[in-house]
Image (tube, rainbow, N blue to C red; front, side, top):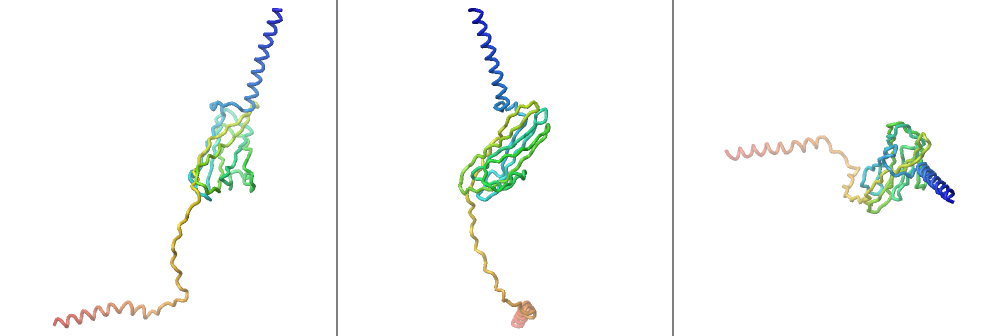
Length: 211
């Protein structure tokens, strides 16, 4: 009985270790690691400008830098268009599709060591509300040469929506009549010389009066 009990405990211990190792391998293959230092690339997303009115254009840029010791494979970019924004164009022609799809996905491919990939999108602000919105980070998945795959989500960006832009109405001067005729050249000369002649005559008259 003692030998059977020891054998059962030994078998249970080996089975538990096997389950833990198998579970750890599955988590790594599915990309649930949360240690930022283990990520093979760096992501940074910025917006310009960060304060916009309705119908203004907003540029969003994401840089992907490979800091791994080897090439990264099967890099896929996923992001969701915010409800208050409308996708106009991007550096990826395949994304410039006129439809109501909010989720966009694109396969970048491979990325060499120290290589930087810059992705840019341009939005149109559709909301007339005054508020601050948070644009979610972009999801970038990848695969290593050993077959393991994972993903990284970039930072989010806050955008201040300033509502509808109010334009002030300005009073414009009325247009000149189109039927005006240009004056004769002799009248122009007369209008120019007449004050000079009158000034000379007045000086002559004043001198005669003083005598």
